[in-house]
Image (cartoon, chains in turn red, yellow):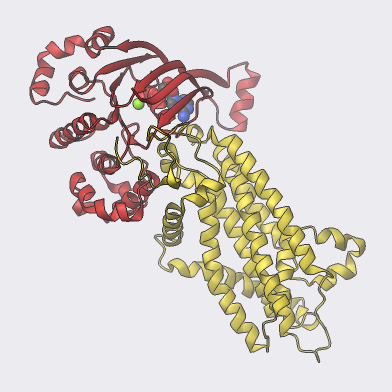
Length: 260
Length: 302
Ligand SMILES: Nc1ncnc2c1ncn2[C@@H]1O[C@H](COP(=O)(O)OP(=O)(O)O)[C@@H](O)[C@H]1O
Ligand SMILES: [Mg+2]
């Protein structure tokens, strides 16, 4: 098999800052308070993903999922360890796309597509399909800063899904979309999975992870604490009651797990 | 596998098995990567041209109103009140050729310094060479230089100026110095500005000082006369050289031979110009180095 993503001892540390201005820092130092604190948001994580696998990345809020995804798509670089990927990467990180709030949806679409590596021709060819998928014809020429969070997530997802990527990252993408849009997204992600591309899917919904993924990774405080079969991972997290939970059943039967 | 072989990014190579190699996804950075992605650069420049004065009624006109207002202030205050008209021939052209260069530089440095912070939503989420933003800012400022040079050419022609080969070479070198130096400093300050927003304010002060470090409201002749041996160090300021090169290209040619005050230019001006391109390249290299060092922490500190 062909490796698609290889993560070796990747560590990323962040600094928590309690004071901002020189005055505050001086006061805190004088009182003997801490002014900064380092911690590992991703802590010595290693795993290998083969081409065509679909990975569900799970964990509580703040466990480092988005940070790990940012390193995989190249926004951040690990402080130590290494991350290697093969082919083009597209997707959404931490719900929103990288849009410029003062630009129109149209300009953002073109710019975003270019950043993801689309050529001018490719963008022209796919433009209508993207707008159609996002369902934002009305707002296309108004600035993205005025979009609802759902609308901008839709546009971001629509662009990312139209890139001929080899790796697709989806970080809580479905959290803000409405139900018909979630259904559309799930269908497209299943197409991606079935076309043999690598899928990296962050979700808190046991139902949709079970449905989408062939393998689950669980992060806890930045460390990889589980790597294995989806149902085991869900059980490991204690999310398995969800599936039997009557509240969730309605969603599952609607074929889409709640993705919050 | 999708159409990996047809990957448009810098003609990705495949190995024997027809696979693209594994790479570190965060590695495609640096000025070289910027030049490889010209379509994206073109989009950013075009966007910034239309966005720099977005939401203002006069829009693009501000790019001309700004230098024009400076021109008027200096022309009247220095020319009329301090009576420099008498000692500097064609004082208007003298000032204006300096303003074009100074304005190009301060715009590149000022807008370049803010460029990363201004595009933080993109920088935080998308992987791309972040040098793209300061470089796009420089090119946007360069775009505005064009019409200003045309105004300068027309005004100079009215004074009887004719282009000469030496002068045109001087103009090109002058622009090149500011392009390289401006990009270098924009790289340096745009990264620093992410960590301390104070940098933006400090850069404003530098911009104000620069106007007095170049022969704009005084002539090079005065430097040569009054500063004595300091004159040599004066020419080690690349921006002063760029201004002199521009004045050599335009102002010098406007002064008739029968004028009693003849323009004074330093000896070996072109040589100084070429040397300053070298200095600017060193600044650019330092800017790139610092940028690369800081870049890793940029997305998390925005
Ligand atoms: N830019 C940043 N600076 C400092 N701390 C950060 C930054 N981004 C994220 N963190 C912290 O890193 C941890 C992991 O965040 P994240 O990867 O977004 O978690 P998740 O996506 O799993 O909810 C959290 O504790 C968060 O507060
Ligand atoms: Mg997250």
